[in-house]
Length: 146
Image (tube, rainbow, N blue to C red; front, side):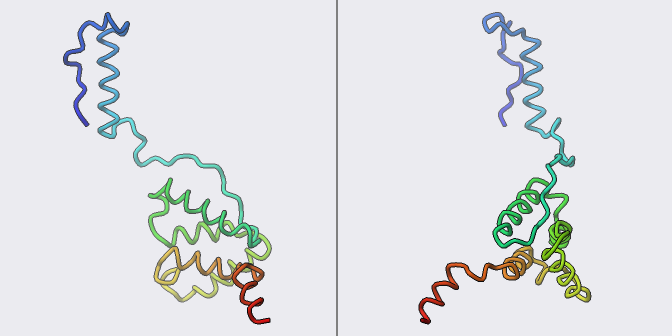
């Protein structure tokens, strides 16, 4: 960023802002460009994410919410296992809870919670398990077979 230091500011009488105030503004802008005053390393407070109900129509929005959280808090979710544990922690009731328990049992002797340690592997497993059996693709295949 170009240095906007206090050179050639003048008295500030034309703008109605004193030279001291202008210097303070330039110092603040300069500090921001250098990362000072930025809450580097501190987390933002995000609203609580809703639990996954296990209904097919909620899977995409649930995963979108997870992805947004991962992008806003990259230091908190810097490895795939943290992302998977977070998503699993939101599966507390009904079908979603049963799926979580079975998924965790299937991963007991594995190094990572997701195949290949990839978030997309986990999301694909989730989408496949909660797929709508009456979706358009299946419906078209059924119609062609009549």
